[in-house]
Amino acid sequence: MLLHAAARARGYRLHHHASVGSTNEEALALGRAGDPGRLWILADRQTAGRGRVGRRWDSPAGNHHASLLLVDPCPQRLAPQLSFVAGVAVVRALLSIAGEGRGIALKWPNDVLCGGAKLAGLLVEGAMSPRAPEGGSQSSGFSAVLGFGVNCASHPTHLDYPTTDLGLLAGPAGTRDALFAALSASVVDALDLWDRGRNFAGIRRAWLDHALPPGTPLAVARPDAAYTGTFKTVDDDGRLILETGSGCVTVEAGDVVLADPWVCRGVVMTKE
Image (cartoon, rainbow, N blue to C red; front, side, top):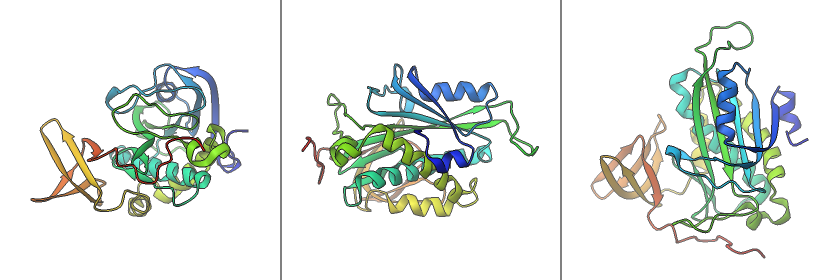
């Protein structure tokens, strides 16, 4: 089966679809309808895949389109931390297939790059659920969906920034199914490390271990301001710390891009 045995042993389930509009939307709808969670939605294709702020996400067959529904994963105020959990999980899964030393790194807030080229994107969304968690404890009714889009068999070539795919990095081993099996296991480990938000410090350290190196040039666009500088760290609340010529800037939200995304050191852009 596609779902890793370690995930099945912990009660995770899988709905596999040939085609859906959006795996995130399908998972959100099931959460609103009272699904108990720990449910993966995996689709061969998405017809309305989306990224942050409603951007379109290309979803051809052979690539990875999957979302995980979690019911009452944490106090609702801690839900933004799930982006770090998802990032740690997907990078660990990618490295287990592609190997170390390939330039795979996390870019705040929700991208995975390889040598500067986009390899994967994450989308974490929330909804209210009518179901209480098992065991009878009180629940806020909050559910979260962790969405993972990974270029496996192909990557878009019409964008204004470079992209790559897992097949270029790992060859025949870099398939959608292999990645999903690895990811369904690594998510369990990352959630355990995070411990419902009680150990954000641990997940933050793991995220920084896989992040772009300090000093990477970044550009940040916000509705009210724009900054250029270099990546320094993320703080104890998960905010980006950007070092600029006039000091450090704390960024809670915004579009963050490499200042020179076409400098893709170490990326193999054509199949061997």
